[in-house]
Amino acid sequence: MKSPDANKCRDLWAVALVAAAMTSWPLHAQSSGVEQTSKSGETSKIAPIGVMPTAFMKIPPSARGPEIDRKKGYRIESLGAGLYMVTDNAYQSMFMVYDRGVVVVDAPPSYAGKIKEAVREVTDKPITHLIYSHSHADHIGGAGSFGPVPVIIAHSETKRLLVRDADPQRPIPTMTFDDRYRLRLGSQVLELSYPGNGHEPGNIMIYAPAQKVLMFVDIVFPGWMPFRRFGVAQDIPGYFEQVRELDHHPFEKLVGGHVSRIGTHEDVKLQIAFDDDIRAAASAALHSQTFPTELNGVEPVNSWAFVSDYTARVAGQCVAAMTPKWKDKLAAFDTFIWDQCYAMEQSLRVD
Ligand SMILES: [Zn+2]
Image 1 (cartoon, rainbow, N blue to C red):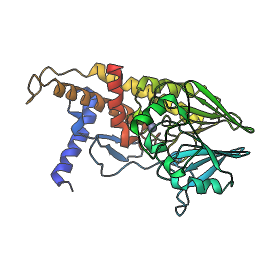
Image 2: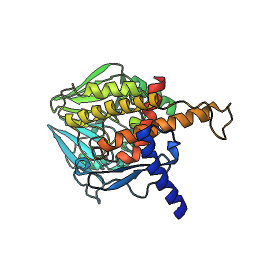
Image 3: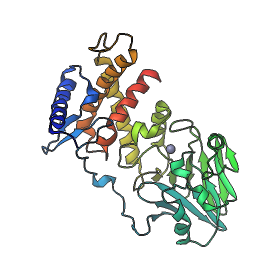
């Protein structure tokens, strides 16, 4: 528990940082939260990285999908013509039924043990194919629980990463491709394509043209702020470009791999607007904050401390600039806005 003095100190810093953001008065932003007051008068402090806030912002209705049956631990949503989403409302995967079997896309360990059960609610046909959206264990780390699956398809980069990781829960793909692969099984089609690096090398788009459903994981989080650092994007300019490209894609339903509901083009447009705003906010902060030439108590040789002071002020100004417009538009804005601002200023400085 924090001492009353510590709380009082944090409150003072919160107020001071708002003043700093408005006046460009340099401050050590990382040691404070950012306080914003909404039109309704409700006040929330946005705790910096590593500080647990006293309360998180409420999750708005736009970020909530249908409830799951807690006893089952998952729900199935029909996406039309034999295609289904399975979700525990934190992760999302898909399966497609064709005349002789079932294709599963991704196996998040949080509910992979129940995917066979979910498939059996729809069909008795066997799982013949497994597709990996990308190599990350939080999306495919339950694949080992399926037992042997005759065909496992992934991008060649995903295979390279999985060979390196040597994780028995993520069996090595039996078939890979580089640019495009069209999987046709009976009357069902899945078009796999690789748009290049963004989230991580090998992260593919999985499109069901008849159903107009696109699965593209860890890019847009419908209704929500992306997970920290733009969904842990390895290449932020590439990630921004992919979000922009998504707006031109003919999908009607987007399976994003996370959160509780299907995404739409409106979600993509909102993410593009967020990306544009945060790039502008971080860019303005990089220009208006000055790099320190000396700091009290810091050895002149400690250049990393100088960078840390500068980037903390840049991120603080970015958070303050983003908060009024965005805090009610994307769920969990307060949880990761500091991460996003730090990621943005870093990318703008080096990419
Ligand atoms: Zn991932």
